[in-house]
Length: 144
Image 1: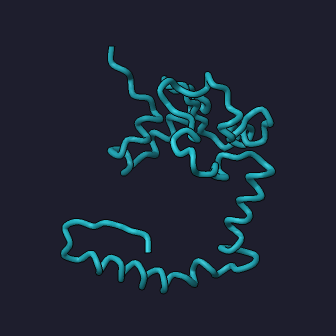
Image 2 (image 1 turned 120 degrees about the vertical axis):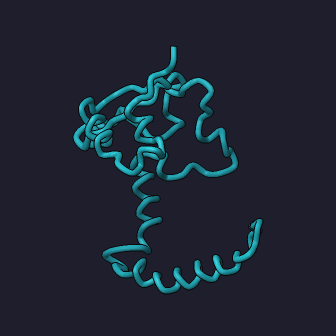
């Protein structure tokens, strides 16, 4: 029997990007759902907020139970063992500390116009890089 496509899978399908809003509405009808592969989909603000403040829930893959990982899906740290774990996969207070360090230079209250002020330089730089690709059939990258 063919696997039925879930609402969440339909939302992820690029064919539905033009108008995903009916699918979002349908997803919110059951705000907590379990996908066939074992993932949980939580679709409303109230439930997401509850999870974010529940000490039993962790973003840290090192703290997740082995049976929560779908079969054949390697743990995130197994894919690139030489890289440090990103702060998005950490729990407070370490997540909060690293997030503040990463975002501090880009916004209020210290530098509210920093990103907007970079717009001319970013436009000039990306335009120059794209112009260097004109007429090329293949592009390779090497760190400078």
